[in-house]
Amino acid sequence: MKKTLKMAAWFFGVAIVAMVLVYLIAWKSPAYYKVVDCGSVTIVPFSQYGSIMDHPRPMILENKNFVIFGASHTRDPKDPQIDEIEFKWKQLKPTVALVEGRLDFLLPGFMDPVKNLGEGGKVKALAHKAGIPIYNWDLSKEELAEKLKVNFSGEQIALAQILSPYFGAVRFSKPASPEKYIEEYLHRAEYVGLREKFRTPADVDREWKVIFPAGPDWRVLSDTAHLPGYLENYLAAINDLRNQQLVCAIRQLVSKGERVFVVCGSSHAACVKPSFF
Image (cartoon, rainbow, N blue to C red; front, side, top):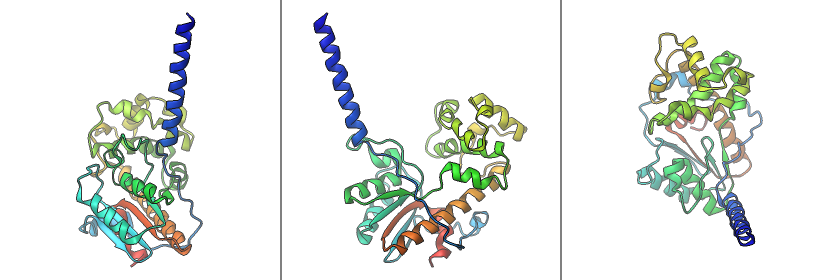
């Protein structure tokens, strides 16, 4: 009995040590970069993006102070963009990096950064190797929800924030269980005070049918195509807010003497170009 208890204690101790090591080694999602009011910025409104969407991919904006690498989103380590990111990184020798969106859990040495996190994972790996700070240039979902209340209802905001990760995931591979996938994001309804209204995927289905009684089913949608109803205007409003944030973050870091390497979607680079060139 004592021997069994000793072995159980030993295995428990090893498990605790392993968990601590994983916590210490695993990548943490970069913090949001907080900007102060930087005044007016000049961007191409996302509603007009269709008129300029025939731009190079990747869309790269650069000078001696920054590189804005507007990528075509990828999770392929062999994508030529990955080598180009590294080439531009070496040219600039950045002192700070900005990535788009939150980067999920990754255990370096065991998980490929690009396969798991896309082009942002490559920039995170480069920043880690160089020992420089890295931030998420995006707005938090809480900040976005607050800013969007001016033009959209709470139900519209909650529904879009819960489903937007799913629409993005479909561009790579449709999740085996759409319902299970969105469960992780139901808490976002809290940002507009509607958590009780969106407790389960069935609640999402119910509200979707209220707003889109004629369909389509949200499960078949991807953010690579036009989204129905208010979602197109919602997407445009979000991208305008995010692009303003991106411009402000770059400006403020450059004003502090930093050399800034940014990775973002190519549409963001195209829309913020008027602020820099």
